[in-house]
Length: 313
Ligand SMILES: *[C@@H]1O[C@H](CO)[C@@H](O)[C@H](O)[C@H]1NC(C)=O
Ligand SMILES: *[C@@H]1O[C@H](CO)[C@@H](O)[C@H](O)[C@H]1NC(C)=O
Ligand SMILES: *[C@@H]1O[C@H](CO)[C@@H](O)[C@H](O)[C@H]1NC(C)=O
Ligand SMILES: *[C@@H]1O[C@H](CO)[C@@H](O)[C@H](O)[C@H]1NC(C)=O
Ligand SMILES: *[C@@H]1O[C@H](CO)[C@@H](O)[C@H](O)[C@H]1NC(C)=O
Image (tube, rainbow, N blue to C red; front, top):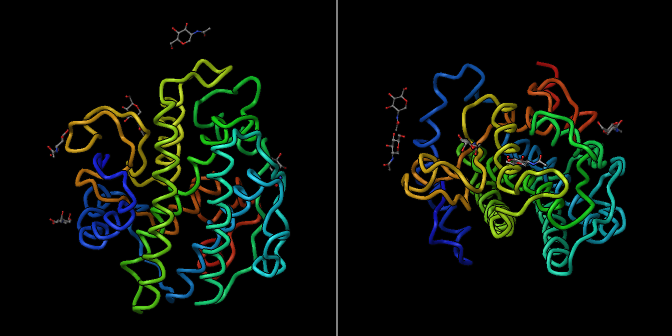
């Protein structure tokens, strides 16, 4: 659901305040009767923040490679902590505006990794599968048929934006889901600040997609809006916890106050951010719908204590 008037620089902050104030009550809404949802994990603040690093690595590598053709190893290698380089990442064929935005996002993710590393310690970079084939597989699953030719995230700006649509939003809802479980003031403050930039990135990507909502994504005979709708639906299906992810054009029952069909921000019926648990995040980014079964972007699974414990549960 969109918070329609707020696409200004103050957006992340507003979003943040709302999540703090109402996050708990709002997440109660659709989850309580779903058996796979709302299971709390025992973990330290540091482990919770380190779980998020898995997504920050994914974003950093995808954005840096997409914009520059090189990744963390060529920019701040120590942050990878000896983890293997990503598979299949490459420079995308972006127009100058999108290239510049994505380059900035890439460096922001480097900053996030450094912030976490410095404040709570790091994890090793997990093996990431950023190959065009992997994105193609996700898109095939989202649209329910084999796209011909296979979807290539690196082919042009639209495809790259659609592929990016898959990413910061998952980080954002993960951070929202983390805050209520943190005990220490410093970790809350860290996560809140990371969330601020993450939600800003998501808003920018969604706005860029919204501008192109009715454009057909050649050669597939599907519009940008349809792609976002289908990929959001796939994430909802994989995570198994109801609707927490919405496309950029929706029936007004999902729009802000049931009044808009534009949905530039994905949010619940109070227009506050959805939140997700580590289990839900793992189900989505593994592409398996099972937090114990790695795959998708993380062929060997995510790193850190929480991800490991989910695999052995
Ligand atoms: C949360 O869920 C419980 C149990 O389903 C319900 O009694 C309560 O009213 C809900 N709270 C909110 C704020 O929706
Ligand atoms: C990456 O994903 C593609 C498509 O699923 C797969 O063919 C390839 O083996 C994967 N690579 C790794 C290293 O897991
Ligand atoms: C493209 O999609 C529209 C609407 O879904 C449909 O009417 C049309 O026949 C399709 N065209 C092709 C070439 O598949
Ligand atoms: C996708 O669009 C359909 C039809 O408008 C709608 O019912 C559904 O809620 C949308 N799903 C998402 C996740 O946006
Ligand atoms: C929007 O519509 C749903 C039913 O589709 C209803 O439950 C909800 O209360 C409505 N929200 C507002 C703000 O009118």
